[in-house]
Length: 420
Image 1 (cartoon, rainbow, N blue to C red):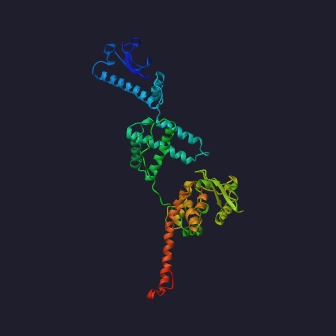
Image 2 (cartoon, rainbow, N blue to C red):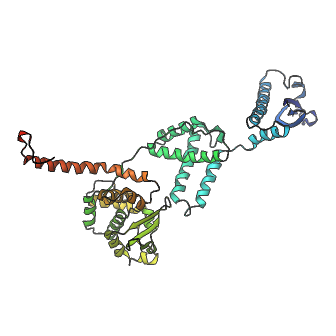
Image 3 (spheres, rainbow, N blue to C red):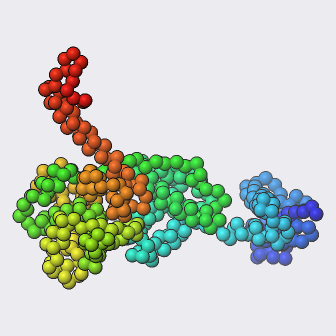
């Protein structure tokens, strides 16, 4: 059966107010069944054209109201089209539900973003680290600042977010906020997670990130060489705080544990491993991945050195670690005293374990990945790329040896005493 949809605008004279103006109503009829709703517009009866379904004249009032009526008519037709695309029968009830569903379910970006952040806050220590909440809080702050800069608004209907919005947001991060490439990409990635939530809930019909592409630039990881580690180990410091920071930094160099994972260590994390020796059994707070690390001699020496420290005894800590901020501040002082020309931070210890301590000494990348608690081997392979420099240095030494050897070899008449 062919569906017939008709739209009529009329005034309700019985509801005229004290000024004598009447409300304009919309009547939608589908196969003889109808529903009505107010347009929220008012007009004097003498200015209304029943034949034309509109306000008489071309003055500003008439144009404003008639444009609004055209908008409402288009909304009804769009609702009808939407039902047709969804293969839903076009009835008075279905059309009404489709029409008002769109207006009633208007969703704004900021409340959705904030609800996401609130859920992370509730799961701190269970599924998320405090740093994760901090990043998303900053992301929301940046998003609001961008909307105020670009559109002079503090929130936006999520259906209005398109490719241009994302492109302009990235431009703002790079220009106004002066973010580096990887930082800007990470903020956009955080924003993309909110869009994915909207898509998963069917609040968006299309993905505004569909044609968006960004690329994280690979950052060369800084690590200490074997000589620098030796200098650090042999250096005599005059203050206890520098000795403590040096020792805990070295502990991380020989375990590969990040700052927060070292901080969370207790004596119960040390157990006997598969080889009958002492191992550290823990989980990375960042990824919740398991890390099982054999305890090397240097690591054991540091553990033994601080086992009777008051903080270790009273707080059941394996090591009396300072705050990350203080550790990094003192490490810069240590670097100056040791004449290490690198911007020394605690996380460099983890890079040092992956490169100088393990991969350089022939530990298979699969084993390194497992000890680092990486979920993907590709993450560990970034460290292997760094070792191209080590290959170059080793080959340079080989060239020097072969050059010295060639001087003592008789190459006359095409004869050689060596296969090199």
